[in-house]
Length: 191
Image: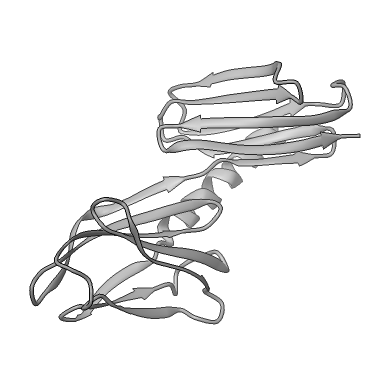
């Protein structure tokens, strides 16, 4: 029991550290902003810039171990509200920017969303998620689409589940983790 509690504390602390290490947007010129990734904890990340109709106007993949700052010139974009989304496999951070006739400004606050971590670990399936008291659903299906496990998650800051899978039949299984932010899918094989 002490080991489970210690593991949970370490997991929570690591998520807290990750959650504090977000990219920062600095407005550097009239229509130029710099993305500062010095505190980003991952190595690679994606950047999407989309307009109000969610059409992507920029998409790129970058490496924070070799590039800690990147400038974006948005002077060729029409005036309006745009979203700048920076994400990796664990979380996404979205900022809104307003491009005016001769100006650029950040509006609102950053929106941080966390993805679940789903992994097969020997004879176990481990699922971890920083739920922050939001509802979520975990479902596991076999290759024929039959439900083999379902759990509704409510009123939890941190969700951590270890499912014993060694007694399940050999084959392919699919994990579906649904949150208010979307559906995350993984698969695993039992040999």
